[in-house]
Length: 446
Image 1 (cartoon, helix red, strand yellow):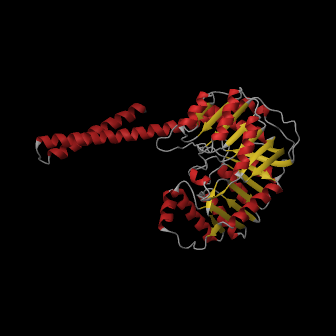
Image 2 (spheres, one colour):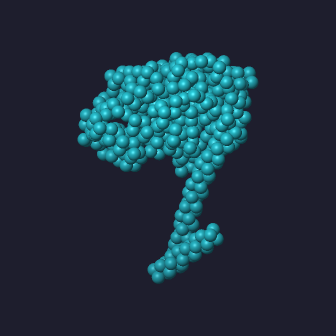
Image 3 (cartoon, helix red, strand yellow):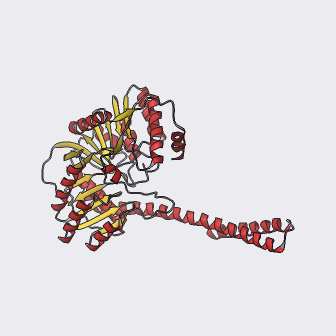
């Protein structure tokens, strides 16, 4: 089959050369010009086929990368599946029911968490937890800011010198000085997305930190200099998790470390002896057996009273948009907040276009005058979905992301109050009927 394809390509190239030569000859031009034009057409065809073959090779490399990721996840889970926490959870519960068919994750009840809405307070606690680490730290982020990462980097270097194993996984470009300091201090550094030509297809947006399998953080450290200044408001939320849910997160972090480093890591289960609050949580990481989009769809379908979304981006799939439209038509209150300030103008205009479209349907839509660095969805004052995910058609099911479902009044009240407080610094969309030309363009382009 491959030989036939190669033979077909060669025949087409020869036919192209013959037809081009005939066309040039019948032009009755000077011999020198004929030779020049023949060479130009020949090289044009060769360059065109070269670009095609190169682009296809990139595609197959990415496709192979996804297959390898799935195979490694399967092997890893098969080796540790007997170590996963098993709780006596009532399988008739609604929270368990709407996830059990789609996800290879456990509903845990022995959990505790702490929510931070202040970046300095969060960073101080993170550094303290790093300084208390005994065995290992898996630190995976999308990006970090050089100036603001100094304190955290120094704490990681200090623990590496004391013999703590540290794996630092990043997705995009990172400052060379940071990488140099990590390498010099024996911190294992891996880039998750290895194919950056023609765009990243399998990007890491997990933003997960696991410390000794006892404490985990979900946080966005992609902080820009202009976000750190007082010129713009920043809506922040970070969460620290303790209890049985940490084991699920720790397994996910280990899987990512295996894929990024191309080396198997021995997994040792950490027994959670302490009894925490009776908080029901489920950690969902989109792997080969999970689907973040399906989770959001199931959550929207559960809504009977309200759906509140506070997101970094809002570029939904047709399924999610249709379900939100159906919810509005069913007299379910839908509220959405997206930021005015983003790092990508194209995504901002596309996000604003979809936000206007949702406002036109009847939703209460707000534009936050600043940056939003977290994603939260609240359903009926009953469930909170918090995680490092991007509600973007491009990344929703191809990027490595996560969501934690929390069934706890404290978290629900926090996200509802956070949304209401941020309304004071937002503009409500009232001119939804008038979509700007650039909004229409980027909506279709993105």
